[in-house]
Image (cartoon, rainbow over all chains, first blue to last red; front, side, top):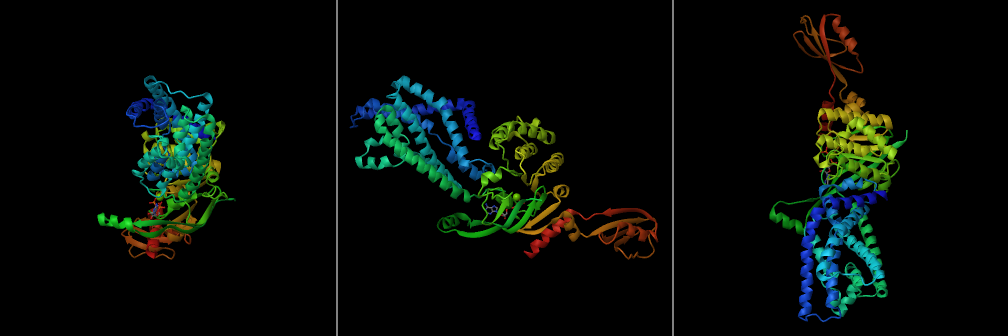
Length: 263
Length: 331
Ligand SMILES: Nc1ncnc2c1ncn2[C@@H]1O[C@H](COP(=O)(O)OP(=O)(O)OP(=O)(O)O)[C@@H](O)[C@H]1O
Ligand SMILES: [Mg+2]
């Protein structure tokens, strides 16, 4: 167990060492955040939007969505792909550790680093401009944290499964990037799915994707009440469990496929 | 003696897709690519006792690294199996590799961006090494490999020899009872090579570590290995002591004798064959098992006065070259 803590801790320290670089990427993300808020302002201004969601709620939704995207950066896929391509999987295999577990610990470490050096500065800047996005209640905040973590697990597993494809296809190329956009679209990160037709919403609600972004955000801004949130959190739990199971099973198959590149 | 490593009919096949050249070939490959099976390791069997140092040698592409990778749980065997201290490195990977130290001379297992010391710290947690053991091992390693000198350098800044020292230290930090070394002396200068050999000897002496060593440097084999296993085209062709091998393939010894006076007639001896005779220099060959050098010298000295003698032992490189060539012919 100790080793996973150690890996996590060293990742946090690493983001600290690179905090200058990290903070400069914040600027870029701030621009995207501002752009998406202005998009919604314009849409509501044109009365193009018919919704029981107020503009205020929508702004907070967008701000949070962009903030979550910062926390939801994973490196599993990239790590696996790089290790397979350079033949470094060999090095992972000869250590008595859970390989996926060590990648997870590393990404949790990065996430904590991002929380400190990207999430918080972005939260403060956007708060000063658009008004602070506060959770509706303390229980809502707690559930938001739980829900965010479950969302992260779901997303992480999807990325992990994609990464494991490297064992068959050495180069993933643009598939990985396309996948990120599809996930963000299906998860209601750009446009909440309550703007979609009823039928589609029903389907989406049972897919894992909405539970990555939309569920935690809805809890935070009070789009759903604490009591109402228990059901989607249940579905999140279900999907997190399914995804972890899929990942571990798939990992077994993939690891059997190992061919080490180079002598 | 307890058996440490055992391979039974161990086999590894690779599926190789034939890539046709050119654009047309690329399209063809998209639709249908020709696959063939290549058997890199073919039904090999061996059993290695605890504390043995075994040289695992063979020409390029013979299947040495593939065997090592199967033994360390990286590649799954196509068929057959291998056990390390009773456990299967593929089924109980985590349990088996805990008792294993592996060095791949051609690739580092240190963390590229970290200082060497930080890599060690991480390993200490991975293997759950307690403080006392860690400090003691670090001390021993420092004595042999002079680790202190490079411990604060990031791994990517280390020279090949320094990196190899780091890798060797990393592989035995947790005092594993079994070590695999895949070309640990590749590209090293004489000093570092000496130091690596010393290191292998020391840990084998002190901890009774089982070691499998692949190398193309026969000096390593000569100095370190009592037993050698020769593999060629994925099959084991010899498994014996270096001495047995030398006796079998190079049973003869050469003796060069310089006389004070060139003999009038060709020399003939009962116990040795004359290879050449030029003036006062005579070159003789005889079976070192059957005939003692003393007897040969005596036989010459009976009729001639000897000024100088020198003995030429048969060379291990020649022997190995003969074996490799012989196996390639028959394959
Ligand atoms: N991933 C792979 N795919 C296909 N063939 C492979 C693969 N890895 C190794 N081989 C083939 O298997 C054979 C054995 O390779 P291996 O690396 O075990 O040789 P080796 O004995 O270590 O040689 P060397 O002395 O050059 O290191 C070679 O012919 C090689 O081409
Ligand atoms: Mg090799």
